[in-house]
Amino acid sequence: MSQKPLIVVAGATGSQGGSVANALLDTGLYRVRALTRKTDSDKAKALASKGAEVFKCDLSIKENVKNALSGADIAWIVTNFLDPSISGENPQEEERIGKMIADVAKEVGLNWLFYSSLPDTTTGSGGKYSNIIEFDGKNRVEQYIRKLGIPNVTFIYVCFYNQNFASEIVPFIPNDKGEIEIVIPYVEENDSILLVDVVNDAGPIVAKVIEEGPAKWNGRKVPVAAENVTFKHITDVLTKVTGKTHKLRTINDEDIARDFPFLDIPSFKEMFKWFKEYYSFGPDEELKDISVAKKLHPKIKTFEQYAVETFGKA
Image (tube, rainbow, N blue to C red; front, side, top):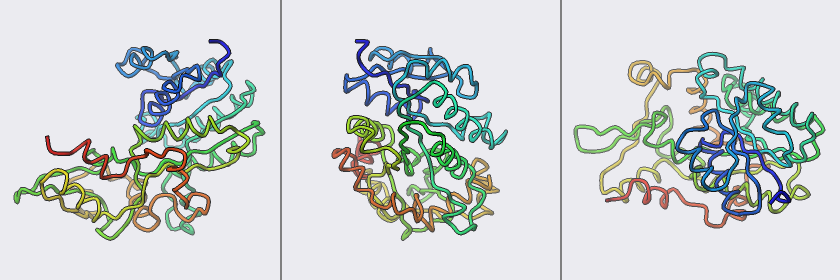
């Protein structure tokens, strides 16, 4: 048992981390140390029952991170901009945490660090969108990691989650005509976006990259995206699988301020404008070929497959 490589997975009860932890456990090839602040949650207990070492860790505290990475061969790290201590409180904190974790990884002699990154939207937009701190902050951490001298580093880029639909981020609101309005800032029917079922499909991609090894993936960016679809396709699919007419309702700044306070943050509003103009990953050449994701995980779900499972007729 002790011969299996030890992989640390941050945010193991969240969307990305949970997907990665479960996929690694399913292979049976690794010891998995699942990091969470809430070791008694149902998700933490489920990971423990599958054989994970559930490890209490606050990623913002250096000593916690050092203990968590001690003895590990590989670590998969994601930080959460929506954590209440970061978003709305101190947006710069996410970048500090990411850099500190990287420093600790170097200090403890970690062999392979995976980091969940996002595009440099300021540079990618020629300075037009310079407030998307949840993207730029992660990208600055990536650039920092690249210069640290950790033996192997790989950057995972996860696009817009299918799980964002029918959530606070993209609410579904019934109207008085019996239709369902998909409410989203700025984007229109012919605009496109990259989508993925993050819970089921991020983990298998990471597991396959680990299986293929650092010689192939050191220094690379890996796009986690199933397909590039228009918002018309999204509404058509939801209408088809539910039997209820779905329509896109594009909201503007006035609508957001009046009815959707959760979205009334400069970085969120710019993020949707970025999506309208640049899909998800922007002009980055290395991330343009999303077929990489399907090669790593041939069973990656389309939005329609996800919608049938999630919203389909009972």
